[in-house]
Length: 200
Image 1 (cartoon, rainbow, N blue to C red):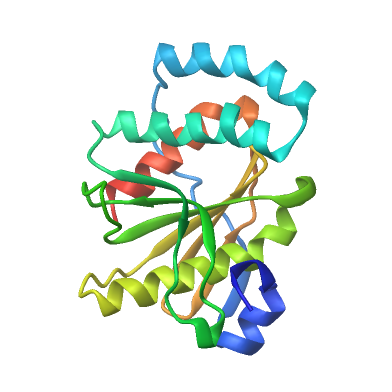
Image 2 (cartoon, rainbow, N blue to C red; image 1 turned 120 degrees about the vertical axis):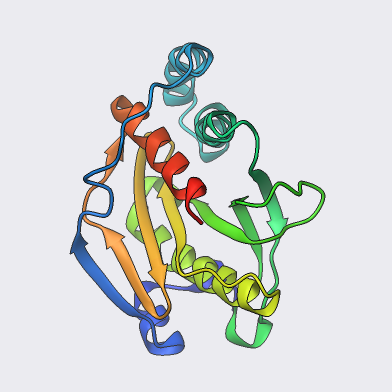
């Protein structure tokens, strides 16, 4: 078993996580102004990503640029990891590759204090990505405790590149944002990413 094998039911039954689905997690977020560079890249890449219409294209043309913009907004004081092996507890199935991990720590040569786990939705299905994302968040929480970097909250997001769904883990409680954010809400998405990474 690995992260990709988790469903919401397996999170509940296997790990004992309680799931809450009817809350707006970021309704009072301060909206930032994305950089002109990000706006230009998004305007150029979006039509191509939609025409190619593969997970790889959306990852390379859309998702990574949102994450880089959030990092830039924070003056590159956070670290970004892509496609890394994150083995925390194989017996519990908390192992495998993660699409993206962002950390509030500045170290880029090694992972420290993971804060935000990013899962690319498979087959444009956000719901199917919620289980794996929750498992990665739980693993990040365990990892931080083991490494003496305990954090009260771990965040996650499942995205197709054009649609984003955020999650928050507090101890054994997983909150799934009832709101989804779309590509035409790019400023809100970047603002949420920045807010998460600003307050680990």
